Image (cartoon, rainbow, N blue to C red; front, top):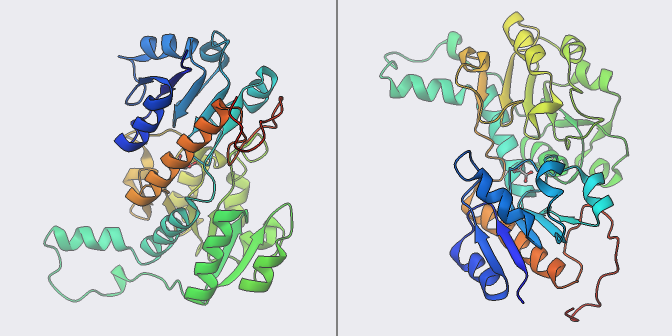
Length: 332
Ligand code: DGY
């Protein structure tokens, strides 16, 4: 009997075909109010799940007694209760590495767009309001040779640091639980405490995963320690920031601007005060959203799922396996 798989995000046809060759697949193009009941029913009898951006709680997963693996098409796994999955013996696989450079590009796009007011000024031109040469009221601020403060220096943080230092001559400071000697040697990055980072960085950039420890890490107190020149960048997860405090800091001039790819609630509600602020560049969570990278992520997730359902070690597992993997090449 073929194992049952639920794909809860649309997969490229060639990748879906790799699954349908091996498994009985129920495919969903996202989960919404219209298909939620059918999705829950399919999950209840599945051996494997693959997809992204759907919160998976115990109410959904408790009935899925045969579930062996969830393969998320994302590097972030904050939509899962990892301890719960581990207790249940369910593997969680994810897609690090393949999106690192693309996500770092997005972060850098936010840095440049916010500092140089790219979106605002492009809109001015499109609206036909460019009638004389631009004066100080529309000037931006420099990026090159400024100080970038990275909160977190994992894979994506290091890729941002490389762009900043080698490409833009920026001075890089970072806050991290662990020193990253490679980044210190390669990009002159200097490890500092948060207070020093807030006081010295022209750009404060969050590149951390969302966990119980990082939730609301950037609060009113943090914004109060930044400088009026600071541009705040978030390309990781919205809930790391107290969004009300960010809005207050932007409105009061405690900071200069913000470039945001992620928000407390996504999609960002149309009535969010952030959308009224001229000093905010807001993107629709596009960190990894290029054709090439989204394909690579889906491909890696499919590989992970096939490996997991064959009793082999997926390329990237979040939780420690509760059962031994088969030897490479052996199919169980
Ligand atoms: C990730 O892979 O975690 C991206 O943020 C997409 O959700």
